[in-house]
Image (cartoon, rainbow, N blue to C red; front, side, top):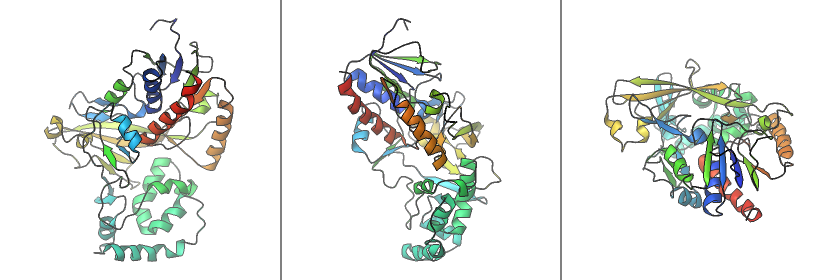
Length: 380
């Protein structure tokens, strides 16, 4: 790229938030957009690539299932990819036995060695949680026990949560448990409330290539950004990274959890029979095991006699942020950063990292589309 290149818009980060905005700005407003990306590839944590030894495509930063109930988002993203008919199911391994997750009627009957009907199971769990209903929920553990009872919590939730967040669930906000439903039927679909679901037929990398095809969009890889960045855009800078590092940690570091992955090739057609299995028991240092060939049963490698298996480990790493530890202390700190960043002229920010929020992909796309609507009249 010519060093004298003068973009209309500068975008920092090439995940869904940044690339959706770039696509809209280039295709709708015909603006020149420069994206800078600190990694060597496009796509943020949704990036996918092929394992060279097995030719199995895997999600480099953990399994990503696209799901949404938002028809506007679904219609938009289908302009850039076609999805297969994959429906996500999650299993969990406790004491060397496999159970359904989220907790459903099969989980309850199997764990308690019962044969309940839906209404019987609901009465059974209500009896176990009755004495906890009057609690004033102060943390994740209180909320969880009040919803599913102590036995199910300790078997399937407590250890996994402790490994995932690196601290006792007693010190986590109760709001995190809102992502973990309980069902009194045999529905095994993890995303029960989402109308649209699947895996991109050509992989996630292909989506980002298609989003940024416009000749007005240029991308610089392995490039870091700070407020004194050498290239100044004509109209606006849009930042999608963490606000604490942008502002030199002036209010202290925000806490994040990150992930490590260990890849293994197994000489078998099918190692675990599912794309993802959780491991809540503390004896296992990893939290999940991924077998990505199950995401694409329509592809040839699904029938091969080799499979790729990936163990996922949760770690603390503020330099490679994945999940915000969204407790009150960190939220208060983030509000200070948000107010400070809001004072910067010709500057917008958003996305999972900048908002310090636990967004799914569809929520990120929706937020980017809304942000485009907000800024388009300012820069025409």
